[in-house]
Amino acid sequence: MVPRLDDSADTAAAADSDKLLYRDYIIRHCRFLGLGDVSARVPPGFLWAWNFMLNKRWRNMVTGDDLLQDRMLSDLRRFCDGADGRLATHWRRARTLSDAFRKFEQLRTGSSDHRD
Image 1 (cartoon, rainbow, N blue to C red):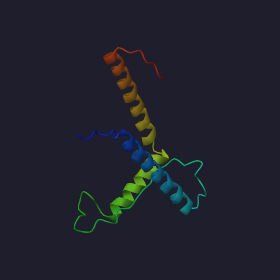
Image 2 (tube, rainbow, N blue to C red; image 1 turned 90 degrees about the vertical axis):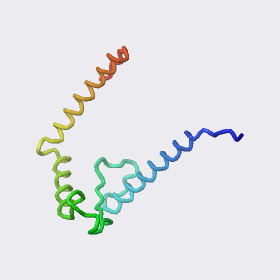
Image 3 (cartoon, rainbow, N blue to C red; image 1 turned 30 degrees about the vertical axis):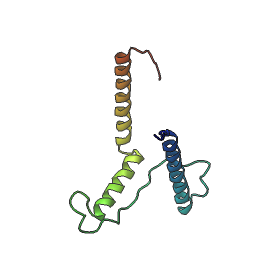
């Protein structure tokens, strides 16, 4: 019988490799956009990718068309800009849920872990 090797090291190495590939892609994308060398500081934000690989056979009311993609990107930009208050509302709700979950976990496990 052949002993089974621990795959956790391989899985961790693959995850690290994926993170590096993603980081390198972001750095190249920023350089292409004229933001210069951002390797020391990867700027926060989102990476939007158009889905031109869908042909008409696969486009429908769910996947939408180019106009829908334009509207979604515009809405995402407004959301991230925070001008209409949706981003702040989202973070307040997320913080409230996080605090409630932390309290629930403390009650469930009996721990007194206080992280603020």
